[in-house]
Length: 479
Image 1 (spheres, rainbow, N blue to C red):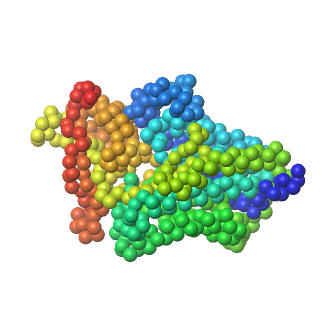
Image 2 (cartoon, rainbow, N blue to C red; image 1 turned 180 degrees about the vertical axis):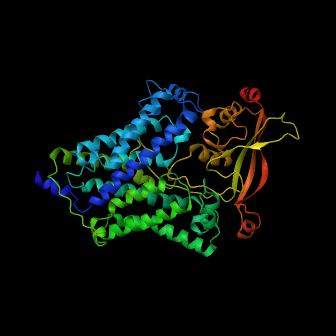
């Protein structure tokens, strides 16, 4: 069976394997910490959308999860802390120093634990990068340990994942919005994206011809470059470098949780060691013979991925292309894509409370969120790759999508619920209960350079209506 190892082994990708394993593990670490900090308040026993009710209602339709038989916040936190511990060991590289089955077991543990969380996460976990993290964790599990050469077939299916990520995103843009086709999408996108970062205003104010050049470059990177990931080296490596640079540009210009970060990590799987050697690095790992059982597992997993790729492949070329869709309960070989349509105007929902009687003349105070725009004088913050789930859902709310969580949020604010208040940047009532809350709509835009110099504001806003009239705790609970 020595010939089998020779076919499967890819001895020139040791650096790529280290980046893949440690990078994906680092993102799992962030994802589990995010769940520890946010899941109980949003989805816990007394959350906005309580997981126990969802599990009871959905049953087997929820998908595989350790919580099907019993959910408690304490159990959720135990699962997440185990995930944090395993992910931290992988970031350090301890399991990778053992036999091939050890990192395999560690990554499959992360995958199973996080799958259990995602499948009961409802709308708060309905983002494409949740499936992306699950798929990436499953594939990276079969990269082996430092004892054996990286399996070429696994590197190949990781390239297939990057291809679906990039090409799927490119196709959904071309099909979804004229502004991508006429190269004007970035006239709006940096200003209207879900959660701008400190540099977003700078990018928004760039000259329009440069915006058009950016969109053209994006189309080239997403619609042409991915095909070269399957070319011989060094072409595949340079294709990966172009993707990495483009994704780094997106990291600098916005907060998209770990979407861009994990894409960068995955793309490194196509960069050969020879690229690093040209920089003067010496890479000479000593491998043992690949065990037959491990080679057989790699072949079987590759066959499974090929079989599950049928629907995602057809979806890439379908007239009604699905974006961020899973075709199986295990979130393997998914369809990806982002911003098939670009929002042209930014609206924000601003929640206010008052300790007065709610009548005209009452003093209303704004609740401030950590990431989403609120106070016009406040500079947008950098949070990615950490995911602020409530802030993201507030962006969708302004677009008209509720999901059943907003009224419970108002109830929690009227109750001064400490878990929910911890998710906010500023509580104007210092933990005390307001008598009334309301929600108003504002139109936001970035200030021009002249406006910023004159008044120091990052945002200019004007009122655009009322989403929820002043309401008391008793009134909102009757709804």
